[in-house]
Image 1 (spheres, rainbow, N blue to C red):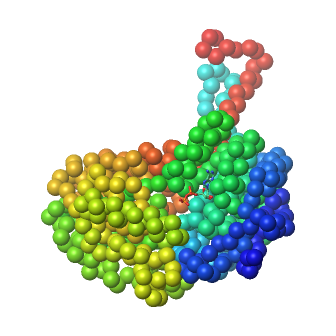
Image 2 (image 1 turned 135 degrees about the vertical axis):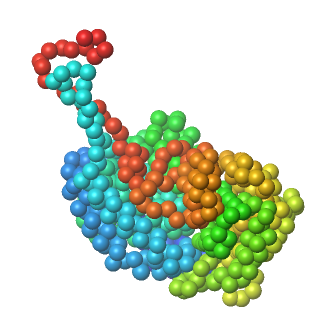
Image 3 (image 1 turned 90 degrees about the vertical axis):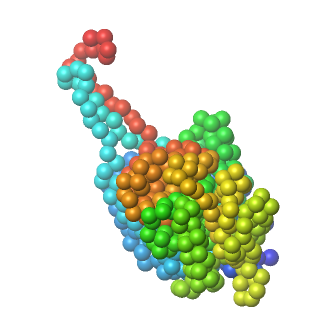
Amino acid sequence: MPTSPFYPNYINGAWQSANPSETFESYNPAQPNVSIGTFQASTAEAINQAVLAAKQAFPAWKALPAPKRGELFFKLAAYIATKKEAWATEMATEMGKPYAEALGDVQEAIEMATFMGGEGRRLHGFQTPSEFPNKWLMAIRQPIGVCGIITPWNFPIAVPSWKLFPAIIAGNTVVFKPAEQSPLMGFRMAEAFDAVGFPAGVINLVQGNEVAGKAIVNHADVGLISFTGSTATGTWIATRCAEQHKLCALELGGKNACIVWEDANLDLAIEGLLWGAFGTAGQRCTATSRLIVHRSVKKAVVEGLLAKIPSLKIGNPSLVATQVGPLIDTDAVAKVQRMVATALTQGATLLCGGKRFTEPPLHEGFYFQPTVLDDVVPTMEIAQEEVFGPVLSVITVDSLEEAVAIANGVRYGLSAAIYSQDMGLAMGVVEQLEAGLTYINAPTIGAETHVPFGGVKQSGNGHREASNLVLDTYTQWKTISIETTRTLRKAQMD
Ligand code: ADP
């Protein structure tokens, strides 16, 4: 029997009573025997209820003027600001993100709520001249209906905020399923909407794993699925959505490269590589996983990294000073371990790390040593596939053409960076990089909420999150033609 507190689903503005035969627990990855809470493993029946509530709430929510919807978002931002430290504390224990980073995760939601509150007074359409005098042409944004929002655990407040807030400000209602590894953070998000007075049914929280996720994807009354997670799951979702003619926005994996050129400020590059590769223990879709370095500076860069890695503060994510926490679960450890082992058999050289921590005090948690692999060549699995752990692969090059070709030579295209003091060279490279996010003299991580976020190739399906462009995902255009002359006029013919 679970002993940790039960956190219910939230459907139609009401906290649901527990069905004790269908629950699951969330565990602290730093102390896997500590249960964070017990949650409902939602079945298709709960999903049906949640979708029905969202469907019934939709007409009134759509009809509420967007500036009024925006006012609720300003209240939401203020509410979340009061919870910033408390949520960050819980986030650190629930999914292992160091407290300082967890504060940033919550801060993103505060910024997104403020930003989307402002969109309530914009949501711009456009007006354009007609072919005919005294005829008016315009286009307006309209909400889609019920949106299914399915999110991962690694940004358990920020990523839901990137999806829920634009969906809801645009007049949609939502069914939200957080990851099964971070359900408490999903609960907190629903609690915030409830506390500031969003109408019943606008947001419905259903906890659970892929059973719940699949039921949302398969539900006929859900008009759009917005998903962030693994490429394999994204492929399944895209296929199901195509079969149902359902809209679908995907944010998937990355295999992000950082090019360090011969003229780079090496201290800055080393600092950026440490943060990009080992921040969040490498568990970001934008994490730096490939260092593509010019041969002339390779020794200096690698030695700089190896000198600094031992001083990274690895440990209890709840402590303010901690820089690297644990991986999310035992499967993640096994995957990283297996990929490192494969790299070594394929000819890579282990410069540091490569193993789970086995000594106290880190042996209990899912801690993996920051790992640097040298002699990596682009054909190796470690150079092609996402690791989602603290592993940096070093690829040495002699020419810029080679660097760009290798950076682009993967199926993903999320984030990429170049360190060079020659801005012309750096811009020339950025122009050629196949990535949705690019950085010059900064690491591959660190997105801001008011510029588009998303990838090319298999990192997504072309949609962008954040910025005002995110509204394209959650609205459909309606063109309005107004004939004022009381005559029939035929476009392209009269
Ligand atoms: P990750 O490896 O990042 O955890 P997943 O793709 O496994 O990525 O999970 C991301 C989210 O998608 C989670 O909320 C998970 O429960 C959900 N999920 C997993 N499989 C499916 C599926 N087939 N359909 C819908 N949602 C799913």
